[in-house]
Amino acid sequence: MTIVVLDDEPGIVLMCRRVLEARGHTVHGFTRPREAIAHLEQAGSDLLVVDYKMPELDGFDVVERVRAVRPTQRVLMITAHGTGEVMGRAAEAAVQGFVLKPFTPAELTSSVDAAAAAPAPPSRA
Image (cartoon, rainbow, N blue to C red; front, side):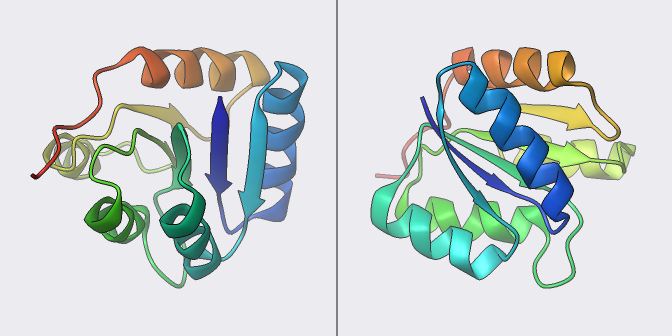
């Protein structure tokens, strides 16, 4: 799979890249939302792994912007804020899964596998 990882913490992006590349995935890592959005608009990906809470844009803003161009984009959200409100927004946004911070490499890979196997959001055509 081709995976885009977006988190404002460089260490999280690096860890995700190492773990996912070791499993044979092609991974593009970003710490700036606008750069990740531009990449996804141009190249797309099989899965977007995106942090919920970032200073510039939150994960839901990123998902909304990406899905305006790629409506069936699968998404795995990273969060340390697994509240009911966040989970409700995720259901409305048709997010395929979550991984809660702090997470282990095994938790990341199982969450990626589950999100990739989940149905893609319906196209808005």
